[in-house]
Image (cartoon, rainbow, N blue to C red):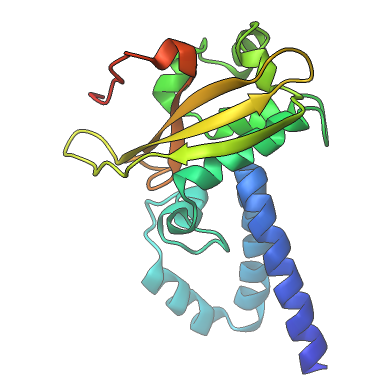
Length: 217
């Protein structure tokens, strides 16, 4: 029935929203597959009508993943995700780092890391895994709990960088005392992740006291 179809569609959209936040790039792959299937069906049944409509709204130079991120065609576009949302997604993943697979939490953090941040951690996911085992960062991995203590003021972007915002997180490790981490978030200016909030830096608050945060990139 129409009501049942609507309920199924709503449930699917909600599932994709959650998947987009936790595993953004996996969600984009799924969306690409679904979109390709729908395109093939429509081209087979209504070739002229659908091709005309599709070409009128799509830039041939855009990659499929760019279309999902930049033009807001995905269930959860860049405009829907705040800096706080990204930190929550990363921390939720880190609390259950090996669910649903080994280092899936670190993978979320890597997916949401800026290019500059990735380079600072060695430039590869394997190097990031090694970095994450250090005594400081590792307190966030499989921690007992965390809380968002503060979200800093929104700093407008300039001609040379995107908008900036900090998020302060308090973490209770499985062992040891609480630690606080300052996440510096930056809104990406370049495709294919244009408009998404990415992790520019994450440092222990003890190391952040008196530090001039680098917003000059």
